[in-house]
Structures are given as structure tokens and as C-alpha cells.
Amino acid sequence: MRRALGQPKGRQFILAVVMVIAIALGIVGCQPAAQGTPIASDGAEAQPVASATPVAQNSQGDGSPGVDGSPGVDGSPGVDGSPGVYEDRVVFGQSAAFSGPASQLGLGMKLGIHAAFAEANRNGGVHGRQLELTSLDDTYEPELAIANTTALIEEEGVFALIGAVGTPTSRSATPVARDAKVPYIAPFTGAAFLRDANALPNVVNMRSSYNQETEEMVARLTEDLGIMRIAIMYQDDSFGRAGLNGTLAALKKRGMEPAAVGLYPRNTTAVKTGLLDLQRGDPEAVILVGAYRPLAALIAWARHIGEDWQFINISFVGSNALAQELSELDPAGGAGVFVTQVVPFPHDGSVPIVAAYHQALAEYDPGAAPGFVSLEGYLAGRLAIAGLERCGPKLTRECFLDGFRSSEPVDLDGFGLLYGAGDNQGSDTVFLTMINENGEYVAIDSLATHGRAGR
Image (tube, rainbow, N blue to C red):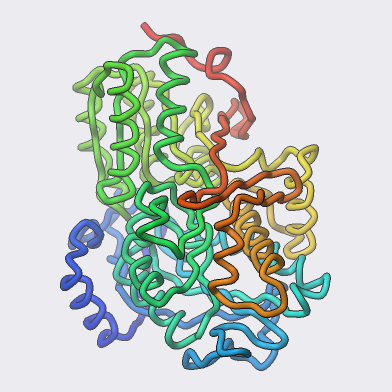
């Protein structure tokens, strides 16, 4: 039985101000998913997550405290008037989920970024500066993302933001970062709005978009397996709707409509109503757009009641955490579940960037297991390092961003990223993976030899 989530302490005044700002900005689609009590995956009631601003966790990439113990306190500028830039260090900030149902995503991204920063710091840093990361927990809730982003910029004085997790949180945080002209690097989301380089000139995406992932899902289901009855289960927020819209567009392109549509509230495992909605459509396959805990519950319940649907998840699900949840909930251990990915297979050491990741991860945390999310975090860290290197010793935010606006490719040990004028997304590649009978992920090229053909 899982423990119910605890309710953290917080600064209610700051929250109240943030909520007033959020209402004034009309961020209706980014409000918390439910005002009531979320349901824990064992069916018990979980305590609601309080919206509070956590204490910053500042460290160099090796996990040690900063040079003077504080990363640009009160937002004061560093050398040459550049916030977060000092003679001996550069400070990055991160707001992500480190507690709650999406915590493994934030923790994985943070681990990978730390591994990349520690790797650079062991080699003298970038242009003589050590790299530090200050992280705040937003529990995957938009109001906290606003509070955290404001605190990181105005109180912690970070140079740039990196490794945010989620669409609803990013939708709330990006206006704050944009107005402050703070770089927003490699968010863990494929939402389309983040790919508008004109509206968000400070955003640098690394991963493929959700539209590209859902297009690949529909293409593989229809072409590899001949499946025509495709349903969608999505998280009821801006992230889920981004995946829903991408799926609907891919279906419409082929003259198709969804066999059924189900949804569930964010930060809950309340999936049974959505499951019943899916059943009414009698689908052959279900595209899943959500986080690992509720979707694992959905898959396990569907299989428990005898539904033999082909499940395929979008990358945001958190692959390692999904497999772990399914190993506990599903008698089949999740065998046959597909997941699209936006990074190379994290266990293939023959791929140069993966080999570099393995070494960096082992140096930073010898007990950490490789995974898709921490690999994406590592790539995000490497991307930031590439930007710092391009800018040179006289580091400014504008110079840093200009390095990603040129057409010169970014080569991360063979993992190529290409940006340009009006294009703020580096990679367009989507990979396919599947959970095998041992509960482990395997990389695949096609669904044809692994999935079940359509009726």
C-alpha cells in the first residue's frame, strides 16, 4: 500500500499573491486539476498537495555547496551586470516536480543535469567557471511553477532556467521567464506553444514535439499493425490536450476519428471513469497521454477486466517509473506496452552520447541506474554547456541565446541538434521502445514483429 502524499509547509502570502496574478492573467487552463482529494493508487484518499514555495537546493554539479554558499542572493547581478554569472561560477535554476505523482520525472531530469554539470566541473568548468544548479519543487502544479520561477529569477538571481517538467507548469512559468528575458532551456515537454520562437524567443527546446510523437504512434499502429480503431486516454490539462490534439490531427490526416476518448484529472489515479469511456468505443489500441502512476493503473485495470488493447504511451510518461509501477500492478509486468521516446536508448553503450552519459552518471552517482529521463536531463545539461562554450568568457543571456539562433549544428557526441531562425527545437527524432516479458525496455524499429495485428 502506498503512503498518502504529505502536505508540505509553505508561505501562504506568496501563494496568495501568485494566485491573484494567475487569475489576472487568465491562466484558466493551467489551474490545479482538482480541488478535492486526490486518490492514491491503492484506492485510499491522499492528502492534497499544498501550494507552497520550497527552500532552494543549491549545489555545484558534483553535489557540493556553491563557492560562497549562495547563488547570487536577492537577484543581484554578477560580473559585467549579468545575473547568475560570476568570475568562478554560473548558476542555473530549475523548477520541477520532486514530490507527488510526477516526482520521478523531476528527479530524473535533475540527476541527469547534475551528471552533465559535474562532468564539466571535473574538467575545469566552462571558460573557468563551475556550473551550479538551484532546484525548487513545484509538485507539477502551475501556481507553484510561477512562484518558483519568480523566486529563482528575482531572489536566487539565476542565469538561466533549465529542465522544467510539464506542459501546464511551463505554460505558467514561461511568461515570467520571457518578460525577464531569462533563457528557458530544454523543458521536459513537447507542447506546441513552446515551439513558437517568435512568441517565446527565450525558449530553447531539445526534444521532438508531441505532435511528432503522436504522428509516429498513429503511423506505426496503422501501417505496421493495420489497426484502425484507435482510442485516446489523456490527462485533463494543457499537457493532455496537447497530446490529444496531436493525435486527432494524425487521425484526421488519414480520414479517421478516435474510437473513444477518456480522461483523468492531473495528479490523481482516478482513471476508472475514463476506462469505462474507452470500453464503450471497443478500440484495438489506446494512445496514452499522461504520467506514469495513473497510466500504469489504467493499463493494469484494463488487463484485469480482460481488455486486450494495444497500449502505446507518449514519452512524458516516465518510462522507468512506468515499468516499475506495472511490475507491481500488472501480473504481466507491463509486457507488450509500447512507449515512444525522444532520446536514444539509454542502455546502448555503443552509441557515443549514451556511453558518455553512462560514464558521467557513474562518476556522479555510482548507484544510479541509467534511464530515459535522466538521459534527457544529461542531454539538457550538455546542451546548456554547448551554449556556454559558444558564447565565450564574456557571458550574457543574449549571447547565450544567440548561439542557438544560428544554423550551426550542435553535436553532442553524435546526437545532433539543429536550430535556426524561427526554429527553436533541436531534435525531430522519435524512437520506439517496448516493455518485454522480463519487464525491461527494448529498442524496436517497428511494431509489426512485436504488436498484435488489427482485427
